[in-house]
Image (cartoon, rainbow, N blue to C red):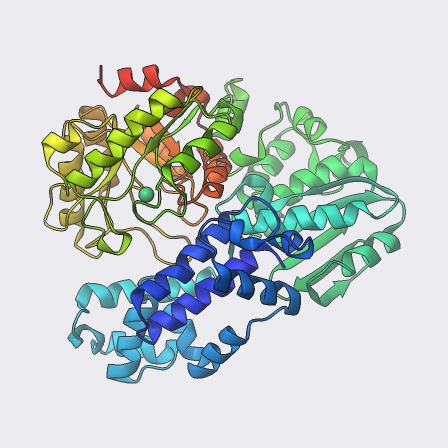
Length: 571
Ligand code: DGT
Ligand code: CA
Ligand code: CA
Ligand code: ZN
């Protein structure tokens, strides 16, 4: 059982409890557990099998630890089975519609007896939904959009979850003798934020052995097809995995082809045609004659191109860059020197200030900013000016004591529904680093949301905007915001925009990050960690930054803190 699966179980418990109107703090405990487990760096299954004490994980008490053990050992959780039985399955699907969530789904079920997606669509189209308290015309539109989003993006998983499966699968396959080369291609290799299925490529002289081993991977629910070179399985979580066994002289060509993207491949085939060549998953050919394809480099070289990093293969600018020898030197995790967005147990984080600092230091970070929530975020026990100043006093003391890392006095200040910030300017003026984020009133019209963000960008104390579009992958599209106006204001007021590395956010996304770069706006990649494990999510952010074509220079937290300070005009 993967960490993602365990996290999903707790998330589902939270959803159903919230749907039933349970105590919000109980709901929150399951949500936090889900996040902690999802971010956790080691295999929880392995910890259970080693008999380790799970309460050592931050935010996991006796009760949750017991549930995790049951889940890992038996594959299911009685509490979740019970809860599921209390709510019709089709109603559970309602909650998953982007823009809905458990609370709204409960209202629809209670007030309009809406029990499934078809009824929901009909009710929206008949304008019945807008008459409910707390709903409006805008909500109806959001739900309809959400319905089509859900239909087209069925069962895509976060890249982070795909990575867990991919690594487990590779580990499993390495036990198979005779495998000469192996790689997972597809959207996974391109680092796309969500992944539809995994595409595994193998070179081996013993195809049958490879396929047998593949079919024995844990969690394979069904073998959908097994042919001479291709095999397809479906895991019990619904994820599909395609396997292709190819000859060594085709490995580069097959890896190139099955890495995609489809659009990138179409351009590549066009280039081949222009040169009187043909490229397929089997190699590069002149007429019937094979002329190469053992490595990807060879494929690209035969088409007069340098090798192109997989993250860039989306038929955006990569061919232009490749032709002119200007493929950006993409940022790497090792370039990151600081992390400027994280929470402690003063608000909704699981770890203490000291634990976060210790963990960051262990990761080799040179500086971090503690950015707990401000008071508007009541559910997270957000800080008012007085509590914040007390935390900052503690940070001062900590900096005297702890060597090798600088801890910055920060805050994630809420951008209020009515506009303006949640903390007074005289408080913000004392901070080293201020992230301004919007958490409430996300359904406001475009003009209003944009105005709120522009207001935050105008505030002289704000350093950066956190998760600027508010999207949650597969859950809700971002709020309606004029990003061009945000870019223009960020440029004018010399502000930084965040690429939130949380695998469910990745916000700004790759396309928006590339646009920000065009506008000359620096990006900060931040984990928004809510536990010490959360600090590890930085790699998901870096991967998205690579897809945006960002280099070390484009990302502010690759610089020493003094360099960041200069950029935000602080002394
Ligand atoms: P996914 O799985 O939906 O997240 O996205 P991909 O990109 O992994 O797509 P997938 O698994 O359907 O196919 C893997 C790669 O194989 C894809 O990126 C490009 C290549 N491919 C698949 N079908 C076609 C096709 O019809 N034409 C071309 N040119 N390439 C294809
Ligand atoms: Ca795929
Ligand atoms: Ca596939
Ligand atoms: Zn945050």
